[in-house]
Structures are given as C-alpha cells and as structure tokens.
Length: 178
Image 1 (cartoon, helix red, strand yellow):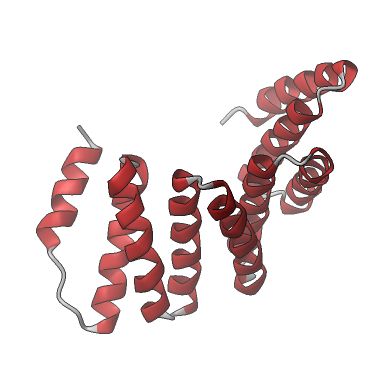
Image 2 (cartoon, helix red, strand yellow; image 1 turned 120 degrees about the vertical axis):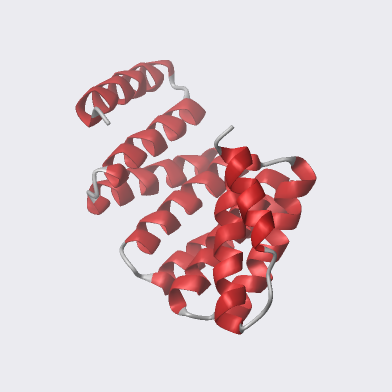
C-alpha cells in the first residue's frame, strides 16, 4: 500500500480532531496510524500509537475503542511471535466485547485466540476457540472470517487426527471468490 500517503492523511485528520477536542475521533485516528505502522512492520511505532489510543479510550470510557485497541496491540505481539502477550491482550479485548454484547467482536476475538493456540501447537484449544468463533460468524454472517477460521479449524482437526468435511472448505473457498 501507499503508506506515506495513508500516514499523511491520518495525521492531518488527527490534527483536526485534536483542534476540535474530539477525543473519540483522536483515538480512532491513533489506531489507524498504528495500523499503517504495523503493516510496515514498524511495531515499536505501532505500539506507541495503539497505547495512546487505548489511553484516550480509557479516559473517555469508550469500551468499543478499548476492545479495538487491545486487539491491535495483540496483533502486534502475535506478529512478533510473543504469543503469551498476544493472548493477554486478546483475552482483555474479548472480555470487553462480551460485556458489550458485540457478537462480531467476540467472533473476531475468539478467532484471534484460536490462531494463537494454533501457532503454539495447542490444537485442542485451537479447536475449542475456532469452533465457538465459527458458530458466531455463521450466526451473524461474518463471511470474510469464515474461510480463514474454517481453514485453521481443518488444520487443527488434522493435527488431532479428526475427520473433517473437506467439501465444506471447498464450498467456502468458492463463496469467497464469488
């Protein structure tokens, strides 16, 4: 992507929101700037922006924003291979999302936790979290995550020596590309 233009856009937007005293908007912009830095693999800067966003979210009581920032911080630690820290942040995000009744966020958080356990080689926990995530995704129709979750769930089943319907994955792949 065009990181420099994205950063310039988000930083200008942040300056405007600061002028207006729009704290919620500032938190969103700080998260977006963090995402750009994370995409560039500049994890130190990404964490700095996510931490600043989280502080604002906590200050104004924006629980939804807190859940989002905690997930982003967890993503950085996941990408760095620090799975215990990633789990800590994902668990905190999940708790907030459950408190809010945010089904989409819950499904996403469960998916993230499942992927951490997959990378750690704990396929029993992978299965547990991904099955719960997939159930929520199907219930509320989060199609973009279904393919990823089903694929990782299939890999977990394979590691655990369980049967799995390969046709379901093929069907999801077809749906994803149509």
